[in-house]
Length: 498
Length: 120
Image 1 (cartoon, rainbow over the protein chains, first blue to last red):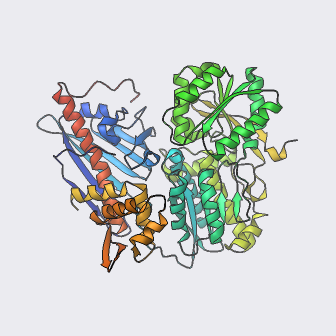
Image 2: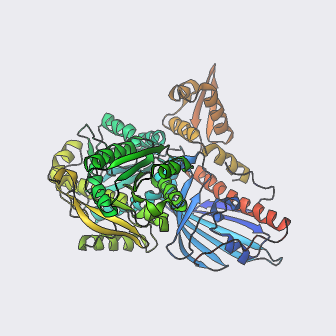
Image 3: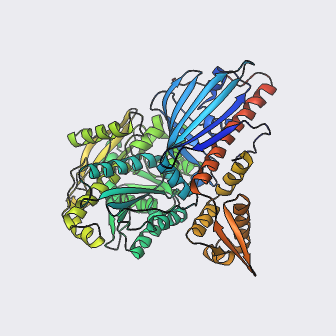
């Protein structure tokens, strides 16, 4: 929890400028340090400076990432991201807040006559985000749906370990919905998106899911979250008769027609890449590490079978709970087991910490990593410590095709040059929503029966290589470099491998 | 809105269980303490009562007594609560910055020069 505020409080004001406008908060504080001293403190990662100034900003340039640790109760909700939009040394820092909520934060440094600084912080949050945040905090508001609207839910992680993927996921969902609506909507009705945050926690996910299910006429829910949340929210969707489109890489076999999966399977990701990595290093020993829940365990089991059937050895395994802070037990086990490769299935923020610690420990030099969740967003967070890591996914932003260049241009045009980079997780949601809309049109309605019959023939030509219904034909082998993920090769999906 | 009220709302909402309780009450016109506790088996009745008290003191829910029963309903609007919550989140961060800067200047020499290498 946050420290008790000191007795001297500065004035602060807040107003909500009309019903359909944005929320503006003005906070300020007087400080006994001159503007240049204060400016230099921003982004140094010193948590004693408060979560905003104590954030981690490796660089201060337009578009660069700012990592935040917010005091929001429980470790699961505490991570957030922002991005530098612009700055003037010692005068002004302008940030786009991305998660757990989106908004704009402008810090102005005004010198005072006594040699100190009046720091003014202006926070702007748009109306839709205020409604969502109100609901996340437990305050429901009534939702009116017009007959010419089709409500579509998106359940994803805007906080907790997987929260670093959240904003680009919401952006991609928004882009798909806007494209569908510009193209006449679904059966002539406009799609309206409702976003909910599971905080990378199945319990919070269940509460968020209940909230989405209360929306009158909700046509479907797109889920981009952990399989642990899906194990809770999938059955809730079935009970409510609402189609659930689950998009991320996952081990789940969803045993109900209303549960539709789009993402990569563990075998898709591992069956060609692990033998190829071993052939490149000449090594045969592997360590399997990850968070301790069903997906990393499934990755571990699949990796073991792929490794052993191709003549390799699993020399050790280590799993830590979600939100882990201390990776030393796994790092020393890796060191002791003298392996050539690590399959690392940590999630989001945990993945970032693990790879950084692995690099810092010096183990990275003799050990190559395959990381099935290492997408473009994670590589951005990892920076130098990701270099050389491999992964296989349906999408990387570096994919050099006309469809992908056009998609990325539309994304930048819509969300600006400083928007969070598109990752496989986010792009998967974009394709799933387009595929859903095509399926509804093909099936002649948004009700489940029409959607499911239309899905068999629905084809959306996006950046991914998919069959009708959105199942992957081929995947991409990527390697992390200093400037992002480089696509090395195209590999067949496991179902298509001979 | 006063700052102390914002702080009370922030403290009340900075707990996942209290957010879930508030959400549950909001799905109904009114719920009794027993009905709420029944949905939060793992939390325990005493803890639920204490969560309800914190939510009530923050002005987020109202309590109505009828015989042996206490009925709870949501009183705050989402916009008001969001304003209070965010005001506190940001203001507390600035207050913490102020005390860190104050401490640094008290021990001699204002906080500076500890920025390391960065590409500005």
